Image (cartoon, rainbow, N blue to C red; front, top):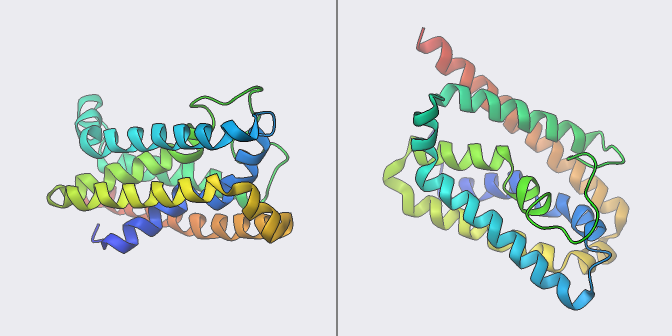
Length: 198
């Protein structure tokens, strides 16, 4: 997969979907004191960042250990991304990840799977496995994407008020459409690898 640094950042921003996650974060943090919300958001973003970095460095070894190939990862990541993208385009009342827990969120569902979900993990593993010599680049790409996501989510309430709920929904649907195309591309790449290795 020949991908530039800028493309990697854009793809990571699409799969972590900070704009699409604004309604989810706003809903889950309604009961959290305003003074504490920023700390909770930064904590969740750091957890997601840590998870993604672990998979950048060790994802390929973990997959090799359990016998999962690149083609399987492409197809599985594509299927999961496609299902999440469909739920973004055809929004359900529960949101892309279904029913949500009560109380202050911790790790689930904000850090995982909202930010560091299966598709984001599959993306960083694929980047690292296809071009291990560019590992420093991928670490910076993940860092930039997560910094942008954290910034967007810290200002989630202000962004939501400024652009309005309808615009947020339209943006989420637009991101869903783009993610659908990325999902199809991942599926096709996985199928192509499968056919080549037969």
